[in-house]
Length: 199
Image 1: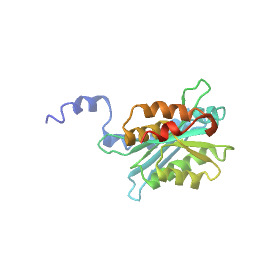
Image 2: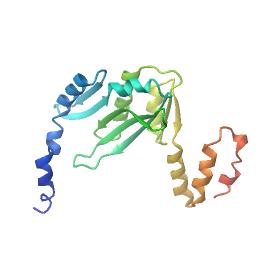
Image 3: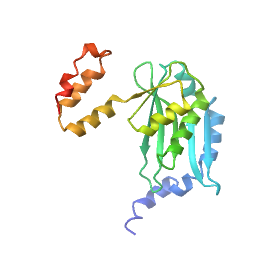
């Protein structure tokens, strides 16, 4: 009873988790009707149960054509009762702010859901010259990017990389040193000895 108390008022205002999983089909239809160029994809399993959902708004698609061809991809673990993962693809807009390109939902952050999300992304944008992907160091992300976008370059997010090094060496100076390293373009301009001497 105590568990249900905070959830009851919310259920009067919003739909329940169970009801929300019945909405993507009608939500997709309205999105595509009201937002010119919007592309959605809804996948269900053989029993008709919700599995994956993809959304790229038309305005995002058109705006990305004026951004640098750099896409950041990541997965965010959802904390609702059904869990799952939200996939996000973003770029950097002309005013150097985060520019959303596409969103997806998968049952978990596994190889099948990642490949599905990247396939949907490619279906929207097709081949892009000089395309660059940025992600964390997860090995499967790199393998799926190279499979779905074979001509794209894959690089590692410097923030994730810096955090991994900080966990390994347990020193505050490492983030300052990493920040210096990632902001230079050639090895000649920065001496790696400062980083190597941390161990």
